Each structure stands twice: as structure tokens, then as C-alpha cells.
Length: 253
Image (tube, rainbow, N blue to C red; front, side):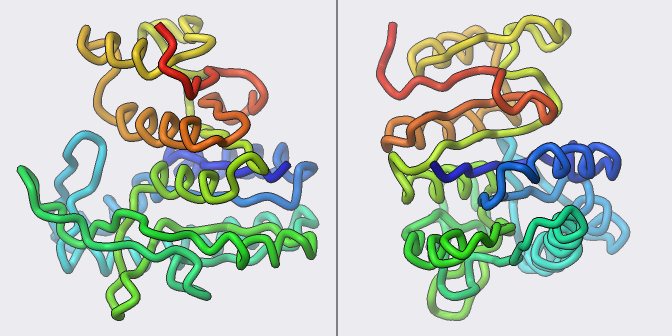
């Protein structure tokens, strides 16, 4: 079973938490780890005077913001994680979607919102990923994709993790690691973890205003993977990778 792990921004932002998380994951190597950017890209953009806009947890990416996210995601964050894993004895390669054509995407069409250089995934090279894994090499994948025509695109890391796990299908399990114990019924109560969640149940919680903002793209990505046949999909806290909320693929009432 191939473990696809997505680590959230809160993990990336906190060096001690990042090291702790990677240390806990090391025994499960080889794996595919997909990371976001946390506050690093936002802070750099602010320093450069580049205004940032988020819509439903997704970053609007104009030309200047694209330069920032490529530098931070594909550069500093990706290589820092690779170096940390190497120090733990995990032989690792850091990639973007453009490397070896591993993830190809298209620029999202303009609708109610123009997301700019944001990419929606078209294809994941399962064969390329498996070549590294079969040699015992873990992969750290930055959420930068390309369109095959020379343009880099910013792809939501949750969406990318879902697409990668979906390409591996029944051979994969997908774990979203972030700062909470799972999907919470009440964000003020850290013990209110929902043990399992169907798309129907989630839609009711969204309608009631219980699930909002940054959780929405994560849930959409999780349901897409579960419905694509990924063996197991979980959303959980970084230090409890085998607990949290199990995402159900069927339309359970």
C-alpha cells in the first residue's frame, strides 16, 4: 500500500512540528508527501507588496503571486522537507508537477472568480511515481504543476494530493495531516471530532455553517479520492496519523 500524505500549512509553518511530523512518518517510507505553503508565501508576498486574495480557501494567483509561490513551494519549502527527511535516513527526491511531466494541469477557466494561474489537474504520471517508490525512494511533491506549453500553475495542495492518490487507486491510502484531530463539529471543541463523514453528511454541515472556509477544499479533495477508489482516506492531526475522520466514498445518509 502506497501512503500519500498531505501536510498542511500549520505543520510547514512550525519547525518543531514539522520535524516531529517527519520523524513520525519516517518509518513508513517510501511514501509520497505533498505539502502546501502555509504562511511562507503569504509573508513573502506581503514583504514584496503583492496583495493576496483567498476565495473559499484557495489562493488567487496573478503573475506576481505565481513567482512567489514557485519560489517558496518548489524552492525553500520543498527542499527543506527533503533535507529534513534525508537527515532522518529517508532517501527522498523533491519534485514539482513539471518535473518529468509528473502532473499536467490546465489553467482554470474564468467563472465568477478569475483565479489567475491556478491549475486543475488533468493527468498524473503514475508510472513515474512508481519508479521512485519501487527503488525505496520517497517523493516530496510541491503543488506547482504545468500545462505542457511552458506555463507553471499553482494547484491547491489538497487537490493535488487527491489527484495523486486517485491515480494510484486501490494501491493507495490518503492522509491529510493538519493541526486538528480531524473534522470538528465545533471548532471551539477540540474533542468534537466526527469519526466518519459522507458527502451527504458534509453537505448538511456546510449548509448549517458548521464546516466553512479552508475545510471546504480539503473535504472536496478527500471525497474525490474516496469516490475514485482510494482504499482509505482520512483527515487527522499530524501526531495521530491513524486516527481522525474517515472519509466515506459512498453517498451514505
